[in-house]
Amino acid sequence: MAQISTKVYIVSRNPWRADAVVEDRANALRNLEKRTGFVVLGVVGENSVEGLKVRDKATGKEEVIPVKGVFVEVGLDPNTGFLKALVDLNEYGEVIVDSMCRTKIPGLFAAGDVTNVHEKQIVVAAGEGAKAALSAHEYLMRK
Image (cartoon, rainbow, N blue to C red; front, side):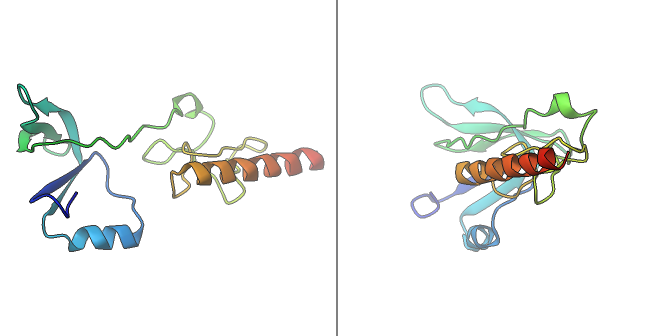
């Protein structure tokens, strides 16, 4: 979008967790403004998009960013609440696992987007699932 727009905003609740190459490219764009630590409250406009209403999580201050279009990137909170009493979760609610997809509970494995693994991509989640299955198999064979 930055190549065809005069101004682009990226609004995110949490700090970026992008690859260094992506972050370097984004930081080099003069017409890109990152707003991290903001919650999107809604789209403003009558017959077309006129703005994006946001709230700063740190200050609680609300504002409307004047925009003519909005692209939504799905950013979901991991569905891990039921595990709080069992495993360690990081600040994003992700299950903390080691390189073999093990949690702190022997015999309990986790894989995919609910874990603290760096990339949230289908191919990575599938690979992590395979690793978790192999780790679980090895664990069961030793029992």
